[in-house]
Image 1 (cartoon, one colour):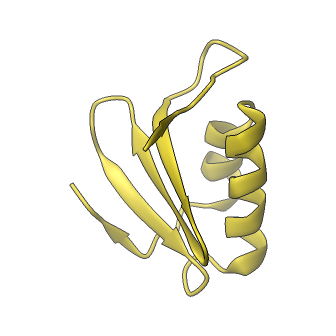
Image 2: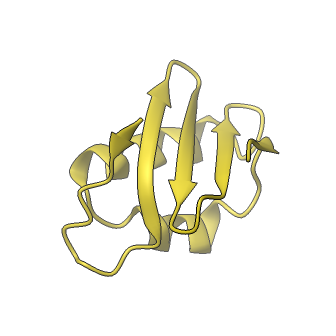
Amino acid sequence: MRDYQNLAGNSGIQAYEIQRNAIVIRFNGGATYLYDYDSPGPIHVDEMKRLALAGRGLSTYIARFGGEYARRLE
């Protein structure tokens, strides 16, 4: 996993891993979730990938649009 840059300085996200049709996100505290093209869907997953690479806005986006996830990993 790659460390999330957290350019705003107040994110609840620690790290992420981009996969072809999914993104895995580890939140502060250790909870890790898989978001994929089935849930919450490709539009949201692709935006999460973009925000993860940008290092800003990912936590806010998930709070607003990405509440559904495919499964919890940890």
